[in-house]
Amino acid sequence: MNRYTVSRAALRSATHVIGLTVLFSNCGFAQEADSYTDQRDRMVRTQLQTRVFGRSPVMDKAVLDAMRTVPRHRFVPDDMAKNAYADSPLPIGYGQTISQPYIVATMTEALQLEADDVVLEIGTGSGYQAAVLGEIVAEVYTIEIVEPLGKRAARVLEDLDYENVHARIGDGYKGWPAQAPFDAIIVTAAPDHIPQPLIDQLKAGGRMVIPVGPEGRIQELRLITKDSDGKIMERMLESVRFVPLTRDEQTTHEQRPQK
Ligand code: SAH
Image (cartoon, rainbow, N blue to C red; front, side, top):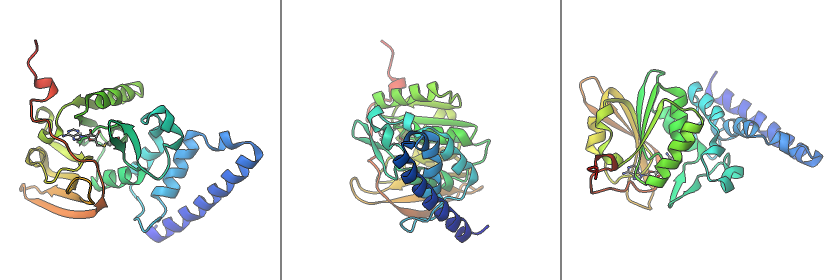
């Protein structure tokens, strides 16, 4: 099936769903039509499989399945749950945001994941991206620099039984040397250059997706690949806007001496 066929089919079903929703809300069945499962199915069809705003549809089945499965509403603050499946980023507190579903899916797809991969994420935030990865690969290691956010995400991930997702507090610039090397690395906050420790912690044959650029401006989402000889290649994927990667100049949380 080519992209055009998928896109047309998805568009037809998107129109169908919108029509149904209107019908149902008029009949008082809105609640049933709007269950979170329905909202997720609709999100996948209308935001990921349809070519909206000139975006390339997401094709990877494992990514689409994960996006259909992970309860995004559980990762956002309670008062945001009703907007959890909208085509936009949302605030999660501490000046941080959960990325728009399309960005989560595109970045995940760009990593070209295999079921037995071990993945590192920098910027746990809400924990949503980590859960999406956790649906697809064997192990996920994720680091968050803002302690209360990292703790909240770890709690939600535990409540949802993501036993293969391991979260810690720290400065992700340095990666997670004890678990390296990684098949894939995803960075969800933007540094102004690619951290060398992350390149070092990528396996031969590994892939890294990272937004790079100045704070508050449009950044470049880049795909970095390391070939079997350790040679690094870079490709620009698209323009994005992420919160900045901040630095903890002291030692990371776990490394502080115990009193
Ligand atoms: N992946 C997240 C979105 C994260 S927003 C999600 O699915 O919700 C980016 C996150 O990166 C923020 O929570 C921010 O605090 C965190 N961050 C910024 N600099 C960091 C660093 N040096 N190390 C680890 N996390 C960092």
